[in-house]
Every structure is written in structure tokens, then in C-alpha cells.
Image (cartoon, rainbow, N blue to C red; front, side, top):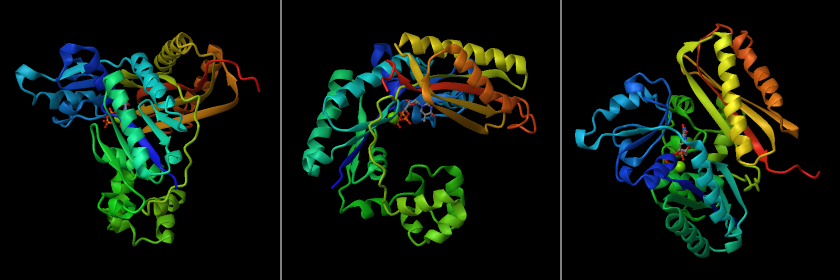
Length: 361
Ligand code: TTP
Ligand code: MG
């Protein structure tokens, strides 16, 4: 029997800010780009639970967050803070170290979430005990809270960790899986975003149980390959193993232009600046190699495109980054990927699969 857990930190960036600055205690906090008094053009990275009460959430334009924050009482204003990625990455490695100390196979999937394979516990009772210990250790040593979901696979664990937040612990045993899934909205399935929900609603699917009457053929016809996986997911099926991801670290940066632009000079200057910043952080953190680069382009209408390139041999030089990044960005500037020459709002670059030493093989 597999016993898989998903651990996700609560309001991660904001919780770190609250922890590290006693004067922020119990305040509503938004972490993201500079709101510039409501004229800022970036986005919210995250908001703590108190700020979420005003309707502020991740990925929301910071100008809208600023407007929403006006509902807060004068004596308890919402605080807007910048992003300090380096500090958050350091905290992330401390959380990882705590998880490593329990000797379970695990996989870090983002800066604040981990899958942990607790199958060696054999019973849910023992797995619960160990995972509660990890949750408490993170609370006691890092003074941060997280939510944990446990189930028969990664899919159930992930849905369960989101079921009760913050500081939740939701265990869905094998037997209870179908009952648990049935009551949930279809949007709770990871990977089902707004567009898919819209299409599913047209098929009269609102909850996971509504989706059970849709045949695999219908799903495939509507959503292609993703339809097949959706057919399985609504039934709680997921055989994805917990991978041993060692080189999970990444360093990245993004910038929102003051005005949407398609000016090649302005964009290339920004790309160079971002690369400079990323490369310095890459070296400062003791890394020597990377084997994937991802870029993000967000157009003025918020259409956002991401592209990644992986390399069989790890690379290490700044010139390599520049060469590849420009190769990846140019199609968005010369029309190949941007036929109507849409103006660009934001660009982002990320170095991934980082390594500290040269591989010996
Ligand atoms: P999440 O785990 O999605 O969010 P969270 O930890 O802030 O809140 P929750 O309690 O709901 O888990 O993301 C982890 C961090 O990643 C988050 O603190 C900030 C960052 N992030 C962004 O920068 N942009 C985004 O759009 C999202 C979703 C997250
Ligand atoms: Mg989180």
C-alpha cells in the first residue's frame, strides 16, 4: 500500500515576513511588486490569510490589490512588501533539511511544497504520527506553519493538503477516497484551471461526482491527452511515483515594464539586467551548473507564455545563459511567436536544475 503526503507551507512568503519582523505580527500582508500608490504594474506573489479577507490573492495585479486594501480600517492598514527571494529560498532549504532528517523518499515540487513517500510506515496511523511530528518540528524550529494532506497517491495527497488551511492535517484513507472526492468542486483537481472549468461546466460538470458520468471517449475528444488523465483523476487514479529530485533549486527573476513595450532595445537591456542578477545569485548560493532555462513572457492582455529548454550536459557560463535566453526570447520580438506584435508587459527568466559540483558521470 502506498501512503503519500503532500506538505505545503501556509502563505509562505508572507509568513516569513511576519515571522522575521515582529512589528508585522498579526497584520494583513501582501508580498509582491511595488504598488506605487496604486499605479504599480506588477503582481501579488502572495497575501497572508488576513489580507486574503479583503479578496487579495496570488497573481492578482498589484494595482487591484491596492484598491482592495482600501477596505481595511485606517488603524490596521494592509502592508505591501517587496519580494526577497533569496531569503525565502534559504528558508525553503531549512524546511527541506527537516524533511530529509526523517529519511523518507521525497520530492520538492516548488519553493514551498513537498511530496513525501511514507509507504514504509505501512499504516496510516504511523504515517500520521511521523507527519504530525514533521509539521510540529517545522512550527517549533522555523516558526512557520504548513498544511499536510495524506492519501493513497500524489493526487489525493495534494487535494487533501489544500482541504484545510492553514495548519491543517487531512488524511484520506484508501476506503474514504471516493467519498472525499465526490463532494469537491471539479476545480479542486490539480491542473484544472479556469478554461477547463469553463469547458466542463458546458458539459454540465461542476463537481467531481458530475464528471464520473463522462466517458473516456468524451474526455479525450474534448481535451485530447489531458482528457485521458482527467478521466483517471476524477476517479482518484494517479500512479506517478514520488521522484527523488535532488537538483530542485532554481534561481529566477522577473520584471514588469513601466509601460507595455515591444521596443527591442528596452527589452534586451532588461534581459541583460535580469541575467546579471540571476547569475550573481546563482554564484552566491554556491552553484556551478544548471541544466534548464525557463522564460516567461506576459503580453499586455495578460496572455502568459512559458518556454523551457533542457540540456543533457550541464552549463555554467553567463555567456551560455545570454546566448540561450536571447534565442528563446527573439521569436517573441520578431513575430515568429508574436505575429500581431503585441506589446509585452512582463518578462521572466529562471535557471533550473542547479548543481553545486561537477557531475562525475
Ligand atoms: P502557494 O503555496 O501557492 O501559496 P502560499 O504558500 O502563499 O499560500 P497557501 O497557504 O495557499 O499555500 O505558493 C507558494 C509561494 O510561491 C507563495 O508564498 C508566493 C509564491 N507564488 C508566487 O510568487 N506567485 C504565484 O502566483 C503563486 C501562486 C505563488
Ligand atoms: Mg503554500
